[in-house]
Length: 185
Image (tube, rainbow, N blue to C red):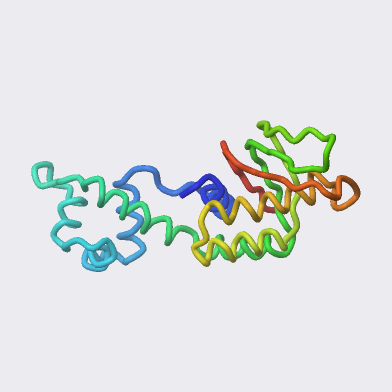
């Protein structure tokens, strides 16, 4: 998961996901009404394995391996705050969002201008159309590169060309994203 995808995920949540594997397992169990069978099916392991992970008996407890820890994390991410996520997504698509980033920006412009790429901190309001396009790309499993192109085009228009008031022939190259955060509402 790239920086842009992580930033979108953080913006859609209002509370942090559980940080420890034990807390994540408790969440999955609570979500499935305590059924170790349903959690085991979800994670692709046996019911007995899930029982070993969550048992209170000191000698019987076995921690999940690295692959299982990743599967647990993905299962929790997919099920964390679904209604909140849907509401915040709809809000971003309707009203837009604020995009905060530190990345390398290069410019392709007419002769006589400076187009050397350099790292910039940028905070910019972007409209709901950009949010719709980003979410549509994410839903279509588009990679980080496609999301970068969408944001470069939006930042080029909003930040560098001031919504079409100047620098009409300017094209923005957006790369080396150090962080990408989104503020909704």
